[in-house]
Image 1: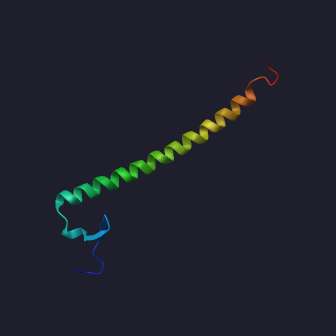
Image 2: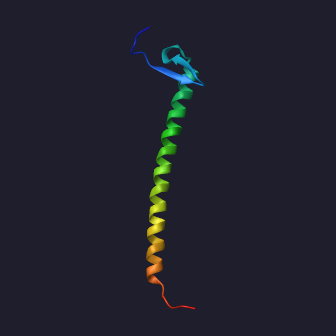
Image 3: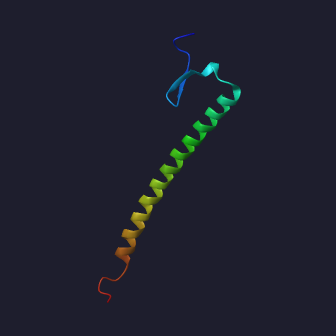
Length: 68
């Protein structure tokens, strides 16, 4: 075993990546992809929320002030 060998922790147990089955490695790849996709979608949501606030502010500035 090498000191630089990759390890992964699952439910508090550390495993050598090289010791895992191909199926386990595939699931790790899937999880990593999904986690990056979630991060990308959260960033898009933050952008959309910022745009929404800007549009709301623009709308407030575009409507008459003295309407009853």
